[in-house]
Image (cartoon, rainbow over the protein chains, first blue to last red):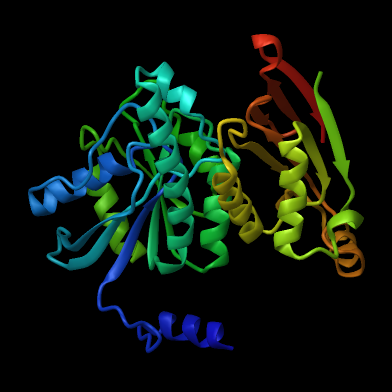
Length: 210
Length: 132
């Protein structure tokens, strides 16, 4: 019964169950999709500072990172304020030997793997706290992976609005059509978080999402 | 050698979510590839990932997971109705869930009509195909 009223109040734009004043916008997705690069792009564009460290080695983000009070503006002058939540990449397997192969020392690799597993658990637990989510996918990779389907399915089950950001469209291998075909029920926006390609289009979609 | 273990829907239907996940993970930890009739709920899939992460150690590296489920949009009305009726009477037995240990299964690729399971056996990938 509580869920019904929650949804009803949400639709009416009023939620007495919600003690928070600001919207939590989560960045979710598999590792190395570009969540932290996008978080940095947003923070650079609107706050003039970076939010997360990035690396070509997977699982660089191993803790939930929050940037409070990010305000973006659209062309019409409308403002949108939210707390940006950068989450660790969700994976079904983590092997410390993969980190060693990328040049890390054994001890560091083991530590990174342990922290990464905890990060995945935290990211899943935080799903319930999100008001809206941008699922950041690497547009050069197969979008039909079970991790993507599980993340989006869980957001759908929780009635959380979703925008799919198909990242890395600057790369030749990127295929927007495949991403769109994989998730026809969702808005998909192609971006390059690294180079800022179509980032304006992404911000416009955020206004529709939140 | 790769071992597959079939888990019929009857074996898991009366179990709680936690016990169901535990049962599947225990099979995977014994280096078997689970082929389960039916599928987990989305919440159970997330719980499965959580439990997998909590169980990772020097021997268990995680899982590869894939779910095949009929595309309801492509089903005829009669077929959909039959499926809905069967679901009501017998539970959601549609689809197939494949879970393999990451130390054995390199990746599982889904195409519309088949799934391809690439194993790490003998240091080379071995594709095993299953028709839907």
